[in-house]
Length: 198
Image (cartoon, rainbow, N blue to C red):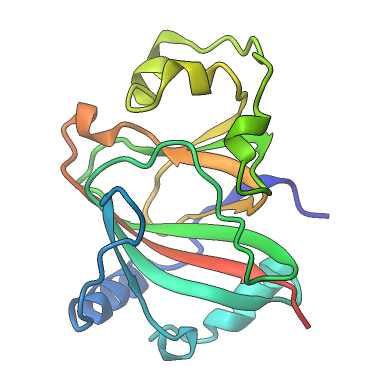
C-alpha cells in the first residue's frame, strides 16, 4: 500500500534529465491557466516522452493507472497551498514531479495532511491545527497567508534532488516553498497527474 506521499531517489538518470530538457526546449511554452500567472505549464502527450519504458516505470511504482496530465512545470512564482483534484477524473489518484533544473539551490515541495477534494476546500478548513512550524518552515512558506497556514499541518517538506520522484495523493493540499527568498529565479520539473478511471 502506497503512503499518502513519498519519494524515490534516482527515478530518472542524469542523461534522461538532459534528454527531457532538450525535449522541453522543442515545445511551445504555455503559461498556466487561472488568475495568477506563476509558471509555464507546457503539456505534451505522455506517449511522446523520450524516455525508454517510462510508463512501465510509473506502473511499477503506482500500479495500474492512467496519465491525466503530463507537462513541464517551469515555475517563476511560488504556488501557494492548492489542490490537484480535478473534476474531469472520476478516480483521481497520485500526482508526481521529478526535479530537472533548479540552479543548485535548495528548494522544496510541501505536502500537507489536509484534503482539497471540493471547490470550496478552503472554506472547509475551519479549525486551527496548532501545527508548530519551525522558524525555517515559516520562512519557506512566507509566500502564503498566515491564516491559511494555521489551518493546515505539514506531512513533509520534500527537498528537491535531481531525478528524484516526489509523489502525493491528489486529494492532499500542497504548495511550493518560497524559492525566490533563497535566490532561485525559477525551477523546472516534469509533472504528471494520474487517475484510475476505467
